[in-house]
Length: 418
Image (tube, rainbow, N blue to C red; front, side):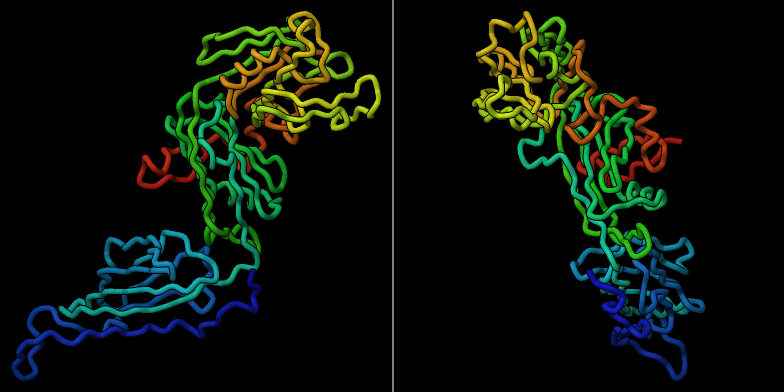
């Protein structure tokens, strides 16, 4: 990270003239040239950028006297062209794309002097070095299959805390959510560094989703600018939701609204009651070691355990699973005897494991336990009422997603609905 002492001072922008040799032709005495001819273009244009160009502000090229701009191109060191727009009267051109901080740019300009003369010139400028750059780690990690359940929220972890409401709005403007079909959703600031995005209702089955952070050059706050771009894509699979009725001691799994199987289960016994509410599958392990000490049970007590457990589907970070429990088959469908997990026979646990994926919904009802935490112990996002969810966005407004970048020329910002 460069500080202000690392800013490259240009001492003003110099236009480097690229004058081409005049076209071959004949003139008589002092008569003006006939047809287009090459001229010195440097005096015909003015570049607005100074020695410390702010990357969050547009750069403008203006025609001088009677001249007109015919083409302007701004290129970075990586060869990427910065988007721009030429005014209808061709008297000015302005960048519309973002500029990176602490970056040198080349400007190529073509102009017409209004008297039949045409010329080209080049210029250069550098942008201000940011004191700090804000980057974003996006989730979920789609490096695997990239297919998730309908309950999977999108997550953003910022490299720095952002507290100011206006700065938070800048962060949200730098985030693009795309989906096909489009949905209405909203951001929720979990804390100063973490945001979640979810639709008003669950994602429609088969939705394609994209998420990108592109705050390049955007001023977030004093000394803090948007850093490198990051993005991900994922797909939503079938709608799979399981309801665990702790009082009836059974789990029913539905796929796209159709009940596929009802399974006898056992849930948390008194003192270890299973949490009520909507949970989202966090991961799956064919075998996992479970130890009572991880949930505060003292070694050697009557409640202690240390077991290898098969076909384990995790729903909280603190260790709540849906898993095989062959030791409690006699209680499954009859009474609750677990330490908080949902236990079933080995065959049923394998079937459940094979019919479930990360992002699927697992809802517990009629338990004597407390409520699933909204954040910090998994994804309890769906336990927050929609109206309350929207209030925790920087804009305080729901937003509509755009089409994913692969299906549209450019994915626009997620914008508040008006």
